Length: 339
Image 1 (cartoon, rainbow, N blue to C red):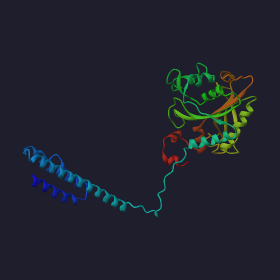
Image 2 (cartoon, rainbow, N blue to C red):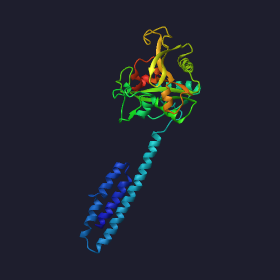
Image 3 (cartoon, rainbow, N blue to C red):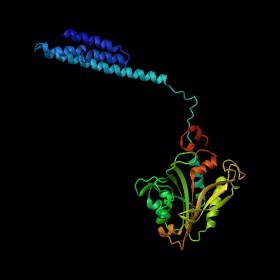
Image 4 (tube, rainbow, N blue to C red):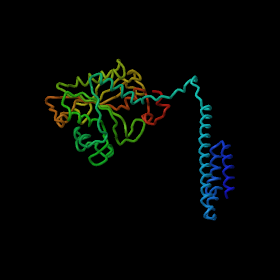
């Protein structure tokens, strides 16, 4: 058995010395030290030896195993360094080669229009406020003078979470929150996502974007409202843009109006986009209803104000002459890269 151990040691050391890959190294390790390896078989036969031979052969077997393990580790380190050198040579970077241009993204058209609108109103002294997208019935309807039977409260129009909690249908609740926390003068715009139970088509989506505005102070009149929105329309669509107001009805404003501006596609001459009328409706507005002011502890006998709201998605469609709202939300790079 002693001669057998010496033979295994010499042969294995010589064999390991010539190995060049990790696969070959693993194969020789299993052949020598695995469960059925040559050295393992010898150790299993130790019980057949006499009491005087057993410690001598055992010590020798351990020494052979240690030398084999050490040689395997040295060879493994040598192979690793050798492979690293080969990789460094084969993967050298030519710093003189031109770089690869990275594809950069760009702002979504809705974000671009939002930034432009914010810049216009900030230039007129407005501040930007945001609020929760999950609202209470009080802030979404009650505080905004919606009566108990208003159709917007119906389940078919609104996403209810509970009887008292819903996804906001407009950003107007934030106007109420601002009036509760801040006393006049108030001059804010409120952008954000809103949710209504609409079927998806070319002009409707259950999730869309709004931007609303609110001004409250002493002596605010309809003239202030019309002047502010006329400046806004000219800044957004060009100095030649004209505006007109049509009477309308909103629960939270009195009097109320819808504002049209001359079609930016045809400059008011008439086209398919404006249905040959030369005008396009872009927002609703009006003087803040006295009931809304009173609910926010603002005395309507002292203060007055105006509010307006517009669908940001619609404004974006008109500005870029896009015919289908769904294109805005399909994340098609070919479409988005045009802007």
